[in-house]
Image 1: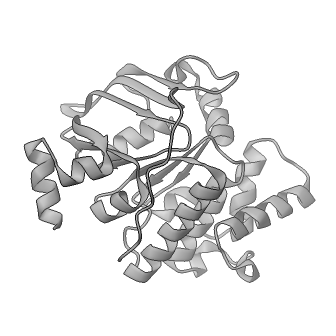
Image 2 (image 1 turned 90 degrees about the horizontal axis):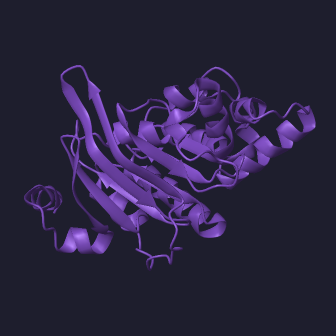
Image 3 (image 1 turned 135 degrees about the horizontal axis):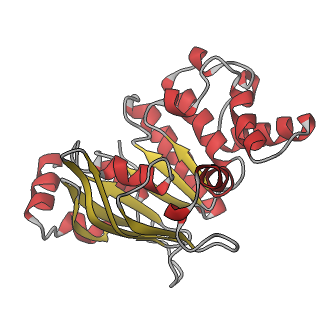
Amino acid sequence: MTLLREAPRLVQAQPLLRMERVHKRYGDVVALEDVSAEVYPGEVLGIVGESGSGKSTLLRMMNLEDLPDAGHYRLDLPGVPEDLFTLDGYARRMLRAHHIGIVYQNPHLGLLMKNSSSGNVAERLLIAGERRFAVLRDKARDALAASEFPLDRMDAPPVELSGGMQQRVQLAKAIALEPAVLLLDEPTTGLDVSVQALVLDTLKRLQRERRITMVIVSHDLGVIRTMADRVIVMRRGLVVEAGLVDQVFQDPQAAYTQALVHAKL
């Protein structure tokens, strides 16, 4: 897969998303230990690491699917509370519906596989309070078109679609309300190389046209190099290195990052 790397995007000085000193333990397993991360408006942040490094756990925290044992989380948006981890379950669901979109590695986690593709997108709009059928239909169509989903299949259920098309339905659902942050958890895993390239091209176009702030988790350094401006490298729940993508991948400082980069060469 050979995709051209664009010049780094200029970002504003104030982070849009900020997580500070997040800890999470599952029994005796430390999933996250003193993890902090910032994402700026219009930026793409990559998160890499081996399986069990904590990168997907961190993404779930950003999506408010799980709560930490300690730490703070802020989105710099009007009317949004100072620490999102203090919100109750209903408030977290509403905040996710309006401000955070997510594309899961496994489409079964993000889609109702036997409902229509347009119905899956409309479900997100319904959660956010939209009840007018015509508006639901039009917005679902617009979101599917933006994700480059074939509109002649918009009433087909995801169970009948290819993996690449299922990811496009997830993407349409995630961007339907123009979220402040789009989270992507291994969005190209399991797809053919040609399909991976098409999905990444769609994400790059959406980011360029809409200036969507993104956080992308991937074990594929090529995906991160193609998509991200900055990267954080995780191992065993810790951030071992962080910086500009080209800087980290071309001149890694941590021994683990060096091994990770060399293993992918």
